[in-house]
Image (cartoon, rainbow, N blue to C red):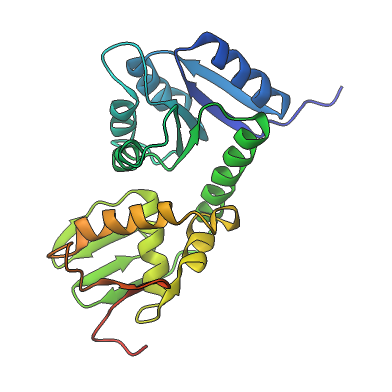
Length: 239
């Protein structure tokens, strides 16, 4: 009998048994290997030991550590993609999740088709990034992107970015002084499935400005083209 090839390992962090059973059934039926954790502390340990390809993380967990805390702890040692599971897709909750290091979200209740589409899209994006050929660097005034090492320097200080923040900045930097349309950025950074999800883009532009701009409320580096998109303004480069 031919051995079934795994589509990847997924860590499910959820304390509702019925939902865990549903997620396990749907994911294993499509050849994913599933490991689970019901508490935040255990989830952090399993993320380190199991080395999953993706984490499905409920933001509301029993115990001392909620999903936000789990994401922050995991981001201290891993860039594994994290998809948050939330009952309320309120902007404040989503922004808090993104700031903690999550990459995407699913709002409960969700269908099996929606779950699989989101998981596959995130994994496809992550694997595409991992297979990209390393380049040299991009310099924009005091801002420097070391593309081979995926490091960002602002002056003499290193700026710590999440994977998604870095990918968005890299895309803007690759087209410095050119306005990138919303749909272009969403497709390039998140994938074609996300080309109409402007909330993702607005949230991450906000995060980048907080980390890179002297005055995020009056941005000079990442500027807005109203109703069109965004541009990385590099005064020392030609468009």
